[in-house]
Amino acid sequence: HVYLQYSNCFLVFHVFVSDPQWYPARQSIRLDPKGKSLKDEDVLQHLPVGTTATFYFRDLGVFLTEYAGPLLIYLMFYFRVPFIYAPKYDFTTSKHWVVHLACMCHSFHYVKRLLETLFVHRFSHGTMPLRNIFKNCTYYWGFAAWMAYYINHPLYTPPIYGEQQIRLALIVFLFCQIGNFSIHIALRNLRPPGSKTRKIPYPTKNPFTWIFLLVSCPNYTYELGSWLGFTLMTQCLPVAAFTLVGFIQMTVWAKGKHRSYLKEFRDYPTLRSPILPFIL
Image (cartoon, rainbow, N blue to C red; front, top):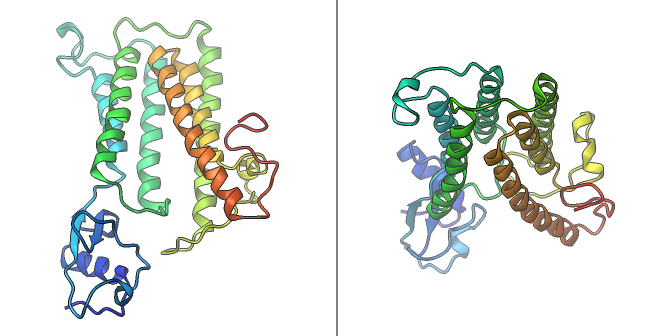
């Protein structure tokens, strides 16, 4: 029996209690198998149902899938497991320290993403359709394999300017990773637990958030900076291609979010650009 005075959250919680593997981020509750998912705030008695109703449950997948793949795939190439390179290179290690540094940076990035997904982000849409999981996994996993193959290849050569280039790239990478995390924390604090309230993000006491004065989506700005640093560090064409494709996609997202801010908030700061200060 369903108590119609409750919201959709009641159904989601009931499913979770019945079987904990179906935690809320994996659930979609619908009135029709091919219909749209109900929103958390939908009150059941306001829906087009009678005294009894049939609800359809669907597992939509999780955000973690697309980030765990690149982490594991890259490590397979780093450890040179069999059938990737020539047999004589199985489980050997590179003589170039930048290769080991690149592996640490790449692993750090995706471990950070996984932890943020679990403990930091509050998604306005807590689910991801399976078709999006397939598309995103193809993108992330494919590029991870492509760049890892060349960076960890036995014939890989270090950047042309040597240690100076690598150290500069590492500074850029770490700076932007810290900045990206700082922005995610600031955005998380804008949205109370269980709420989908939208507010204008402003700089906080954390200096890494001061970029909010100039851009609407500094998390994408820092993300771009991280991959530019990784490109400079490895001097690898597949990494540059991944950075370019990611920049194009993040620009589309940033422009969309920027337009939403302008439309929703009349007092939104006009000085801000979507992703690159004064440029884009």
